[in-house]
Image 1 (cartoon, rainbow over the protein chains, first blue to last red):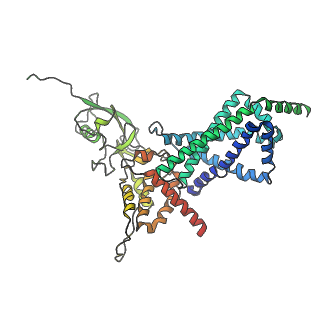
Image 2: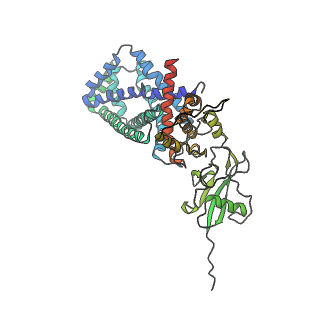
Image 3: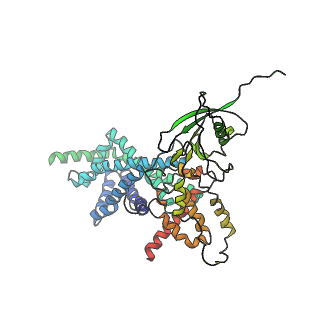
Length: 223
Length: 254
């Protein structure tokens, strides 16, 4: 890596929380609207986002570029780390190892998920009105459901534990007590976020999204 | 009185050896006669006196480094039963047997258990872990240090550059340029000193370059491993705070 690695590493740490962490929370809430209000509320949330002004630039600057940088530089960071949990089986060292493992899983999952949804929109194969139906299709494939579950749990852990590390790396939580408290808060965040995602995954399996899926099939035959 | 023939109790050692810096490591086993209160160093001394392996064949004596024998010099660091620590304070009675001994291979191995800790001393030079007071005239007495501050700073001054924290750190390896926990804690020590504080920014700048403080991945193995109980992760987080402040000050005031 060229340049001063202090700045590139700090940028990596910052982007993980702002904007990616904030986007991650937004994504969890949008999905959760599927559980709370079914297809109607979910599609409303999706539209609310897509109707934002300058949506292309918002996506590019707040999502695409940060994911690309955080993901690629993160792979390099994972490569420069040893996993020595067999010699030092302490909780924080396990979290260190899982942070890197979950990061790699999340990066692969995000690429696959983007291919299934966002790239298909870009290619004109999918419209934003069909998101609920598309998710219904994916979630009713048992293999996909398991892969999504793994991907979602990895991403949620990576976000929550990354938040803990962010607080240390920027010098916000300094002493052992502060770091212990923040690790508990981050574990609570992990549980809440995981529940939000899993409930929305279950909601997408529901029959109300199936009728949307059937309508999608009819539309496809007509076109 | 009839003599009762009891078998001499022995302790089995499995030692990782290496003949030259670039040679391949191999292990040899030794049975050392047990004596009460013996430590790993006295066992190695026994091998030095009588370099015979467990199978009865002669070998070269195992080479190691040690100095103070009271856990203050940092010379006898080695990996004992998987954990890096000082051999002088590793009591045989408290170790699981057979006892496995290996060099701290994060550092270049010179021979057997002898390693080269040069990178640690280079790191101390890089972060200017000293207080510059030499000059052409008497500078007079420096500012006083508050007793409350002296108490925690004293804990940091116990660092003996033994290298155990670097061995335990998953981010100190040949793919990473991370400086390691020990020198970061020394920056905190010298920046806490009322006279040393006058050069605080120079030390922070040294950690805000390639292979500086950013290499820390928060595995926190260092603080669990330090034989002197130095709060290394608190030092790292405190210097994270200072470097963050320095970063924004540099951006906003220049």
